[in-house]
Length: 151
Image (cartoon, rainbow, N blue to C red; front, side):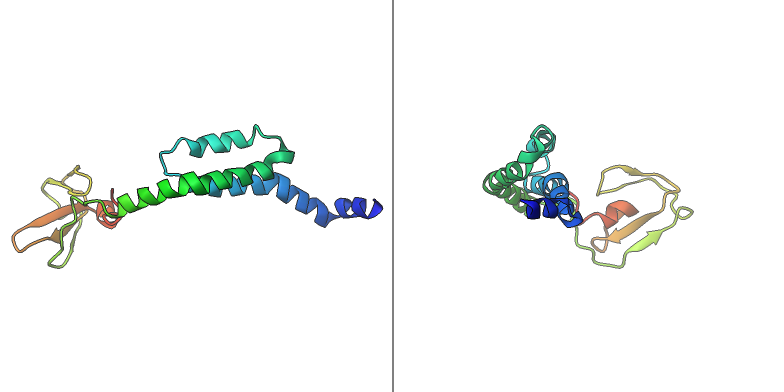
């Protein structure tokens, strides 16, 4: 009994207790909710529900949620990723020539960005990409750099 008290009273024992019952359940659950798709309401519900569970039961409760996430969340998340990866991209035009960076002083006309479908106003620095010999697309600089990630 005294050995148990010395173990719990030591700084290593206290650190382990704080880790297992304090920090680890919240950290693990925040990683766990990433298994669910981004728009799934369970992502916010699980974090809120964690703080209603008594501290002594949190490690086991998080382990139960891990099992649920593996069987319910991961297949939906993989389906969402698969759907995102195979989606058609409306502005995915093959660039055939060099990409030109237009400074704000050079930009005197208004264009429509194919990435966000907003206007590029005169005086705004942007990028011009040739998609064929006769066709050019004018892109916002941020839209051009995010074109691979665009939904």
